[in-house]
Length: 308
Picture: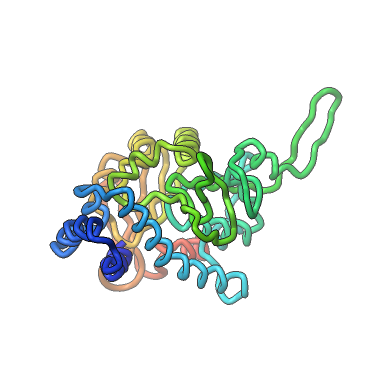
C-alpha cells in the first residue's frame, strides 16, 4: 500500500483541475503520515478520480504480477502457495480460498499444484459469471448406481474475489472475464477507501463476498496468510468465527494492532510472525509469546517444508 500511494502521488500531475484539487486534499493526509486506505476513507474521491485510481493501480501492479507469473511458467520460481497445496490434504468438497489481492497469482499457484480453479466464471476471452457451470467444470466422471448418479470431481480450489480482479471487465450492465488486456474497458476492482463499501454490494462482488462468508461460517479450521485484519468490509464473519473458537493459524510478517486484539479473545488461535531481530519465528498463543529459533516458519513456504 505505501508503494501504491507513492505511485499515485507521482502520477497525479496528469489529473484535471477538479480531481487535482481533490487529490491535493488526500495528498495532504499522506504527507502527514496517514495511510492510503485511511486517507481515502476520510476524503471520498469523485467518480472520475476513483476511475483514475483504479487505472493507476492496474498500471502499477500488473507489470509486477506479469514478472512473477513469467518466472513461474518459465520454471524459474515456485510460488509458496503451490508448495503448500501440493502437500496438504485435498477435500472432495473443494478448498475455499478467499483473497482480496493477488487473486490471479493464487489461481496460478493452484493450477501449478494440480487443482481445478473454480472462480465462478466460465470462458477465457469473454467469460460469463455462472457459479453452477463453474462448479460443474470440475466434474471428471459420472457413475450410475441404479437410479443414483455419483459425481467424481478433480481436486478443486474455490477462489473467491470479494475485491474483484484485474480480469473482470464491466460489460454494459453486467461483467465479463477476459484473460486479455482489453483496451478502453473498465476493470472491476475495488480500491481502498469508502467507495468500496458501496461497490462491494454490487454484482459480481456481492456474490463472491456472500460465498466467502458461507465458506467461513462452515469452516472447521482456518488458515490466514498475510492479512492484517484492517478491513471491516470483509472480516466480520471471519473475526466472529475466530472468537467463537474455530482453530486458526495466522501467518504474518508483523502482528497488527487489530490482529493482536482479536488474538487476545481467541484461545484457539496461534499467530506465527517474523521476529524484530534475529532468525526463527515468534509464536503467540493464548496471551503468551515465545521466540522459536531456527527456520522462519512464519513464511508459508518454509512452514510447508518444515511441517508437511
